[in-house]
Amino acid sequence: MASNAQTKIKLALVDDQVMFRRGLAMLLHDMPDVEVVFECANGKELLTGLKGNAIDLVLLDLEMPVMNGVEAMRAVKEKHPEVKIIVLSMHSDGKRILQLMELGANGYVPKTAEPDEIENAIRAVAASGYHFSELVSRAMLLKLVRKKHVKPVYNDLDPLTERELEVVRLICQELTTTEIAGRLILSPRTVEGYRNNILQKTGARNSAGIAVYAMSKGLYTPE
Image 1 (cartoon, rainbow, N blue to C red):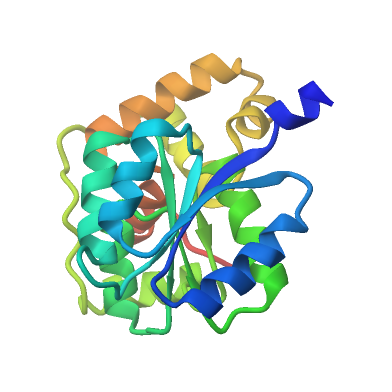
Image 2 (image 1 turned 180 degrees about the vertical axis):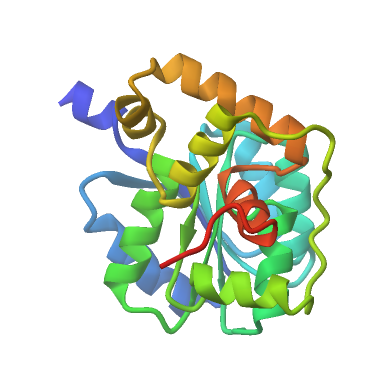
């Protein structure tokens, strides 16, 4: 039992709509690999909760009183960079979604999504670092950037090596570090080293940022 508890994804749920939050919490409680550590109604309460709890992932609403989702995400990324964030919102504007990903969101799921989509997003972000829902499909992101509706804010410090480009393309396919290591016949530690180099060179904040960067530069084209 103890080993199973250790493998659970520890999650915080942040939404000021009490009925929605409680309904989502009930759904999450049915996931055997997820533990809802705490719930709260705004970003300020989230930051307080993170001080005393080890959290892997946050499901974060955007429109909240006291401290909204964007403000909260910036604060979390600054103070707790290891914590992953999935944004939940009623908005479906592609430009705004891409901006949120560039700010450091690891995923974006509409509040109208089916339970399976939310569950898949949680597991994907926990495993690979990011998740694009159907709404935020890679083709949509590519279209936005190519049409220059959104200008990427990433850096171009140094060219990526051929091996780094291989890692980038596999990250874009949502492979985990272990899966990438197996595909390239490398150790997971070596893959993490390449990933850190890529983050430094591109200025991306996380794996989601690497994927957006790759598509904006034509390094990866989604099917």
